[in-house]
Image (tube, rainbow, N blue to C red; front, side, top):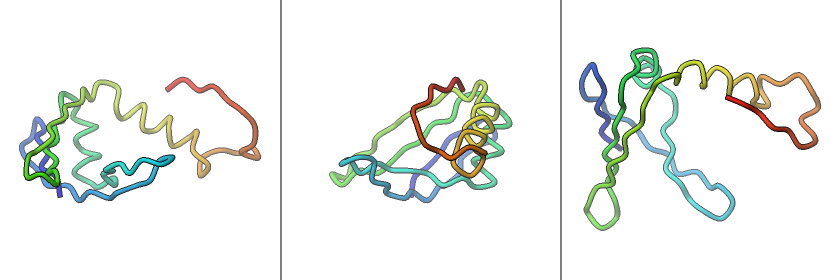
Length: 92
């Protein structure tokens, strides 16, 4: 569980641990509240509890976030219409 601060106030987000290469990273699945934060823009901050009992605080600018999320979906395997093979360079 992480706490998020956004222009409309505070919300809670469930974290998932995803493995990228050999690293385990926290991931926040999309939800209505996260998506509405992208629509609002501004700054979105998360306080993530650590095993040590401390918190890691990260802040993100959401300028262009909704557009970039839509573009990422287009480029994802679910949104792509090619065979998904080969190297590509994408601009979000």
